[in-house]
Amino acid sequence: MSVCISSMSVLPPVRRDRVIDQFPQCFRKEAAVHTKADFNNKVKTACQEQRTGTVGRFKISKVIVVGDLAVGKTCLINRFCKDAFDKNYKATIGVDFEMERFEALGVPFSLQLWDTAGQERFKCIASTYYRGAQVVIIVFDVNDISSLSHVRQWLEDAMKENDPTAVQLFLVGTKKDLSSPARYAEMEQEALKVAREITAEYWAVSSLTGENVKEFFFRVASLAFETSVLAELEKSGSRQIGDVVRINSTSNNLYAASKKKQTNCCH
Image 1 (cartoon, rainbow, N blue to C red):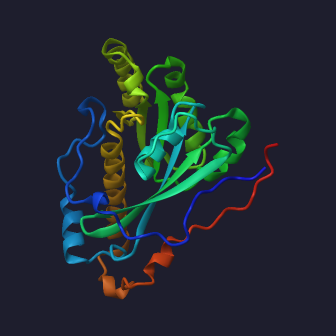
Image 2: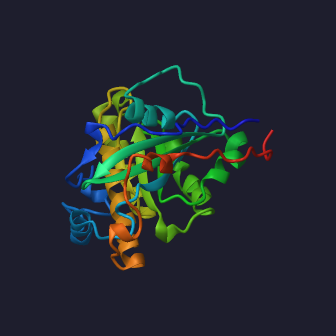
Image 3: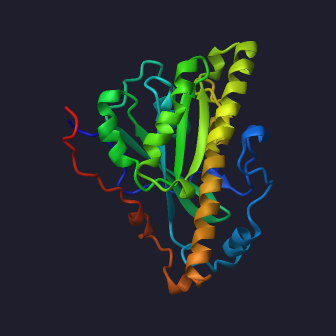
């Protein structure tokens, strides 16, 4: 069985609508781990003065997207990355991969988005790609209470391959456009409760209309970027960019995505 990975060997320049100058705000303060209004001052200063060990490098954070079959994981990613929506999507087999470039506080930054299969028979394939994630996005359908009840199991599976203290969690309700206001309000209360219990930030989106999709991924990118820079500041002791790497026209090669070897654990 093959694992489908969609990627490009060399990525184009950052799109103008992927530039992050201000810290994106949360969807609901009741379930937001970070409620601050701006980037950490250490991060802003480091970016302005270009004095962290790897701010000059193309920084990348790995994001895995998990959840039940047909909750809208692929549609969510495609709406943001391709600004497209296809209601006749095909279920993901194993794992799909997208790389999305940003510029945060003037620094190139990317999210590796790993779209994992929700079918039980593909779990052993998908789980091999969980390791090393900086962000875990657990997706459920706001019209399907059972998909919300499975959130903790998806979290447990993802954390088997990662350090819980080093991962940022997001709980995302999809298909908001299909829910009535009254029905959604009831589901949101349940989702907020789950989000608080697992220490995740909650969002509700519509991949069909695009509601909150861009805002959500900008929030993910900003928090991941800030965490990455703070870790490098602590690790490297604020070295000069010139001591590590200089950005030039060939630096895009750093984005080359290597395909992982095929696994035979599932049939």
